[in-house]
Length: 88
Image (cartoon, rainbow, N blue to C red; front, side):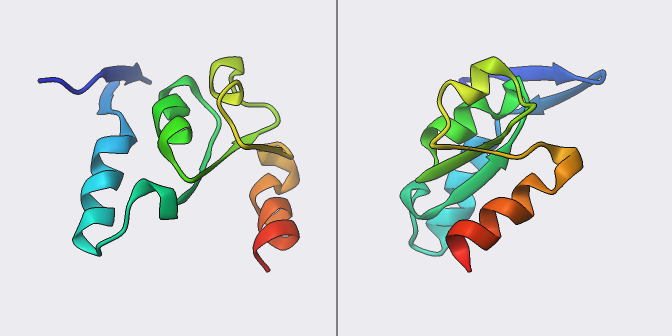
């Protein structure tokens, strides 16, 4: 397989990007139409390829390095903070 695989908590997960691209394509959309939220190394590819990639303040340095926005951490409603500021 050409998909990168990441091991997280003893469960193998393929990178989210492939699945997201497939779902978006079913609706005639591209990754440019997508805003994603992530925090770990396995979110790097998804964050890089999304139209808007948002990473939690306490996220991995690798994933934060490709983020369009850094928001508050998971324990302080970082996603809600971003949504209220930019999407509502």
